Picture 1 (cartoon, one colour):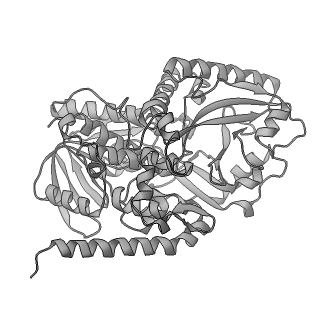
Picture 2 (cartoon, one colour):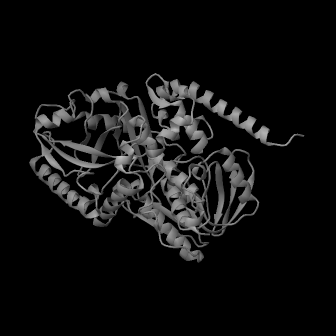
Picture 3 (cartoon, one colour):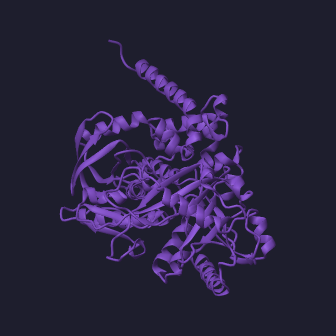
Length: 531
């Protein structure tokens, strides 16, 4: 099976929807064997599916829930260049991060990632010695950026700002004792879940079968027993190789793994509390070396503040919950640099995610490795775990290499370093799209099609204070594999990050979903022969 021959670049081949899911699950349950089964449809699992399918392997990728259901939708949405690892002299991870950031911003997903200025305010809490150390780190980060191939036009060089310039970028900064700021640049995803969706659709365009609501009950080196959670039906899948990419849940399928997940919490605050953020704020955690809290503008009137790093006790839940202690910690730290510190009543949303970290036997989560690892169980299941969102592509490449080697699968080299995702385009192409910028940032060159496929009435926002349109929900049902209102509100869009927004948008989402299902039912009956 040739990757080039099987790849159809038109939108139909990349479309994920309920009918395609049913047809492909029926094929697999009927005994069709594939080269590779991928379990987990977060950023790593969809990355594995794309890597393998683009090399010409036949692929099935499953998840017990939905695309980006787990850790991949709870990140800080930063595409890090590895600066934090330079501070710990971990040059390997720093270099890998810088290289992968460059690939994402230049080739893979330029439509989903924007340059983000990040300001570290020079308050009295930041000593002159600390300032010099940070400036040295920023200079090293600039060198790393250049060596990795990211131009200054994409990510400018770091520099020191005056107190007046720092206050202009972040109007709510506390002025007393402020002597300036240190400005650096990194990449920011408009939405981490949209990256996963783009990976899944691109993989589907290369022939991968993307199957949500399919839970792996047991795994072995040549297949799995799965349950279709929509119907309860059980199916035995046959495959030549298996990759377990379930993150913090990997140990539930391969029990020998030693993972120590940590919980990272974010809170959502209104941008007005910051006076309109012109840059992200980097706030040192008092009393801790090289640990920071970030206030990250989201471009929709919201600011994410995160994140914590707390060990998880007990088995990982499907949806982790932030604690009041975590929320209080974030409010306290970010409040140290603001004229009017935010209060608990200002928090309009909060969420927590779990990092799948490898246990190295240390005492705290700081002793747990941020590196990724590819491990093989005695019965041949390949597990890829650890790592972080920025380096998902390298993780996927390593996992497919190992699976192909062990199963003696004939495959070419990895192709994903320069393979664009659906919607990708040059900066000029993206700027020329004749639709609102907000849509281009989420759909890239497909943004005009999102509007064209819907009734003009669906181009309006779903509710007051919610920018998402009905056309986006219809696109998610027709092209992005959304099956219910939770998929629409919590993952294809991120309306659910603010519970009040979700409640206001829910009636419109239900109406669009019901109309879509009724239309599909009529179409199915029209195609079916009469009794």
